[in-house]
Image (cartoon, rainbow, N blue to C red; front, side, top):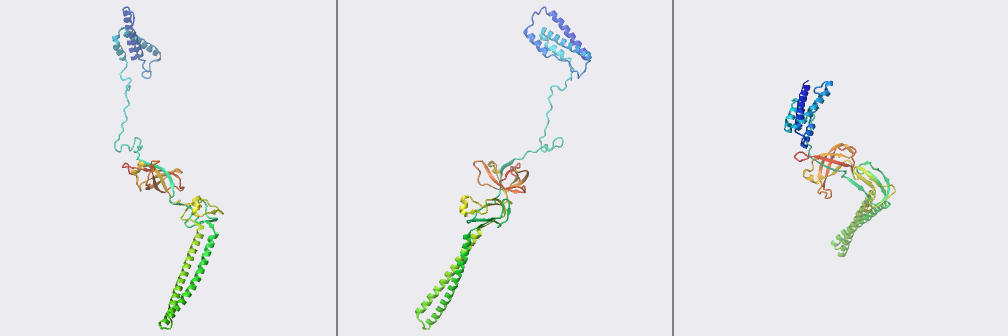
Amino acid sequence: MAIENDLKQVSGLAHRAACHHRRMKTHLNLVSEQDRKIADTLKSLSLAAPPHDIVPPKPQRRRPALFFLAVATLATAAGVMAYPSGVADGIGALLHFIPDGAYPNAGAAPAPRQVDLSAGALTEEPGGIPAPLPLAREITGSGFVVAPKTTTIFSKYEGRITHISVEPGEHVEKNQVLIELEDASARFALEQAYAAKAAAELVLAARTIDLVQARASFERSKTLTASNAASRQAFEDAQTALDQAVNARAQAQQSIASTELSIRIADEKLAALTIRAPFSGTVTRLDAHVGDMVLARIDSVRESLSLVTLTDTEHLVIDADVAETSIASLKPGLRGEAVLDGFPEHPFAVEILRLAPIASAEKGTITLRLSVNNPPAGIRPNMAARIRISLHDAGEAAR
């Protein structure tokens, strides 16, 4: 009802303004272009009817109310064109009918959310969800799993492979037989050395007898010479014979020593034809085949003809490259974490053993050697690895 009364008042004002406009029309023949622009502007600023969800009007009276409001707006615009100086008063009269508080939140900006940045304020957010703490600075790098103890085995002497006792991937113990070779000349050399020793022993025995006889003759000549029963020349001859017997026996002893050395050389060569594991480890490569003729080591190395590659897979490390700009924060003993590309869900602890003495000019990195602690069971040499060493606020890595 209040809106209908307001509309009636507005309609009356519009009617009086229209009458006044007709009276003034005899004095104003033309409306200036500026007045028409003002009229168009006021039409665009005309107020629409209040929303029906605030005060629902009766259905049968909605259309007349909107019609009278439009008529009143147009009449007011016409009056304004007649009296431009009354524009402000006309707009104020129309706005007077809008109830105060109809749009209490119009133009109000939402209140900003307050965030407490004091110590401990970020430990928990509303709802009991802990807020994330600032991430610690990290030093990251990548590298590979390395077996420090690995060797490629060659044959010291040439020979033919007669037996292979291992397979790739097999674990062997120290001094376990890997490959057996045969060389007839080595066996013959050993037999010859033993024969030479036997002959030398016979010679030594003969020279020992000669020495005993020479010593006896010398003692007899000495006694006879003292009693003037023998000449001085006989005594000197006995002395010379004794010296020669001593020298001959010494030579026989030296011959025995020489034959013993020949035996050791032949025996070492024959033993070297049996390839044994120098340490406990895993056979990671096998290039030998039964029946192959193997060259001596010096020729095998030149031709890259190895027999077996043995690796100690029980004691592995990681060689990883990190940016050389991080070297000031790194030192032996610092601990971190590593993960293998083959086992991304099984991280394990690592510790820096040493830093490389030189940096890489090509990559701008420095290599770290890290020990591993409780790595995955399937870790193998040459597997790709990524490392991470977290630094505290002070810039020192965790120990």
